Length: 229
Length: 196
Image 1 (cartoon, rainbow over the protein chains, first blue to last red):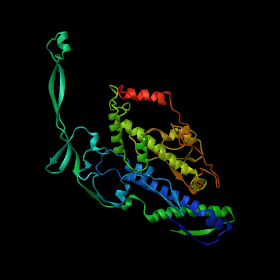
Image 2: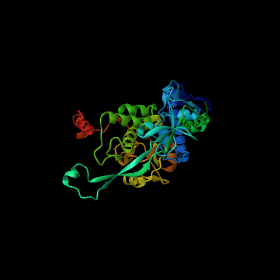
Image 3: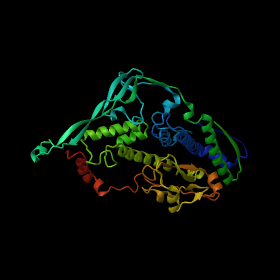
Image 4: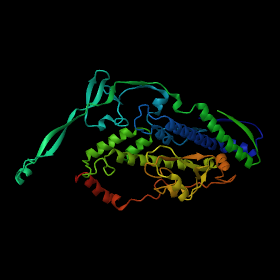
């Protein structure tokens, strides 16, 4: 984000030197850090206020986004900041998501234990066509097996052959729908997941101005300035 | 694991995909946890073990990056202090304020703030590093405190200069006996159920 600085009056020779000689890189470093901090604070606010809608255990997505705010990279007299977090651009700009493979499915978790997990982490999921939900992955139905000690007296030889226990049928398990399967999902853009451009400009301007004012004051200031983007 | 961590840091994958890959790799190695350890932190393939291991590594690299950039003299001039705060909620929370004070940290309006060159950062860390994470799964993080606020709260006197710190990411790291390459091979073979 390039920041244009305009000075009204009260400028000192040191300020002129700062702005002319070394300022672009140094100022973009300050502006970049201000934007990094603004983004981190914004993601922290989302972490504090936006748990997942289904009430599933949190994966701390917004906290991961906060930590994923990269350090400013110098690009001429501007600084670029990248948020390295899968899914953040999708939330900000929206759009249609399709599986990587043309015949693949997107998996949408329906239960807390599926949330934050890939379907392939489960070894007991089967494809099913649910009359209401359409294609889904559900737990394979299974019957619990219980072993019970036989009451009948057995010889040591019989016990060694495994005849000392009886197999009983236990509870029926499975059948829970874990994931919805979809060929595509379209999400609406949510600009509120990042601060507005104006908020980021204001944060950069505030800190660059404070820094320049201090430098100016230290070298014959005070200087009065204003910034724009 | 290094490749997975790098992908996470670059934002090229997410934790769920990374966990799946880690499990697949362990499966390919023929890894089986010790009897009784299944699903616990001792089980290399358990969700909690993979999560802890990868999250700590990723957070450490991210914490270092934010800290190192904050040592730039101009950045330090504008943001000379940091605040330790709770970034993520936890069911069971450690008493960080007590740990902070015990390490020589001071409270300013109830907040844990210190100069960036203060020794308190290393003292509160279970890893001896001046940047987060300061302990496993703590949910704590740091944020910059700018000069105006730091001076207003009395953390630093007006015009105080904070000294930039220099530190390599791997500084202070040493392999324990069992983790050295010669020992690690045996451990991996043993973890893989005697294969190789």
